[in-house]
Image (cartoon, rainbow, N blue to C red; front, side, top):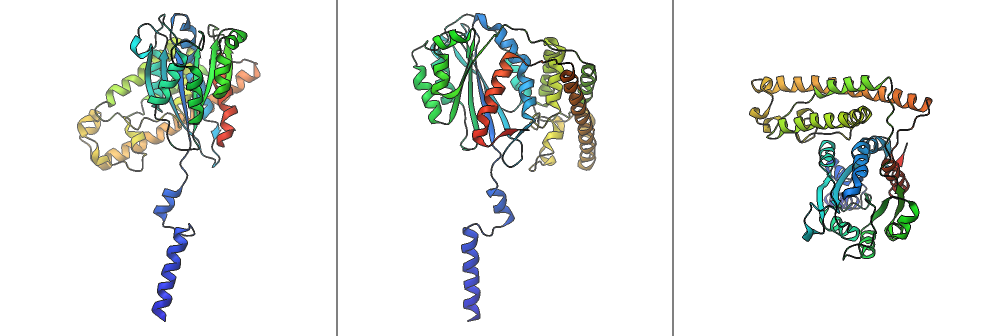
Length: 378
């Protein structure tokens, strides 16, 4: 009887485990819901008249990223953010591809996204909106998590009907795949309606917006800008390159700092604020970020790819060095965030608004549509 009772207990335990009443720590980890990802595909018209649009995208990327530091998932965590980039309507692109190019697949690498935006140039061409939407649906990895917020933002100024691919078919296909299509017409609101940009958004479940793409964003100088820029220079000294492309990627980081500064000092300030957030992660080339990963193994890092000062050190010495740099980075990032808060208060007090047309349009649509996926802003 005792053996029968023991077998019964084992059977009950298995049943309850299968029903989810009990599980091992390892299985509990697997059952944890995946943090949702916001996937944004930017489809930008790079024909002759779109220089203003591209400049807005370059300068306002950091405002969009910084707004995501206030976003929350239903479980109180932060959503992931991935951005993809397409250009269309440019004569320099292949005609057989419909003058369309995937510039960047979905990426969370902010330096890479910035570099790709700065690589864009304009030239006259044919703007095939339906075709670029279709290609972005076919080529990008949109993921399978039903909690992800998946969005297309297409911006341009020519009729939405151009090209052989019917835009209606393309946007309805997107909607079926839970991808929201938002349209941004660069010009007068009524002209965008007459050229079917509003219809594209309506069929795609998104927002129709019209912007003045040539409007210059007024960046306001504050007493805190120089402080943040100096902190950013100190922040850069906490990065420790590794791997075959470590030195190259560190150079890209410096180049994107310089590009932002050349555009406007305020843009460099906003980029520095982004670099102080959790969304700026460089685990692919920075040893500090990499060593924060659960599966990090220092033994797998080739010594010859490290900075020369670390190559002759023991694993223990390297770990101690990394921890020291990690703490230094935390302190600098905290200082940037605190100074950023003071800067925002200064702008509010002096009733200054730095938001640009493109940034405002994108953020309004994101915040409106995010609630459907249990995402909200603090």
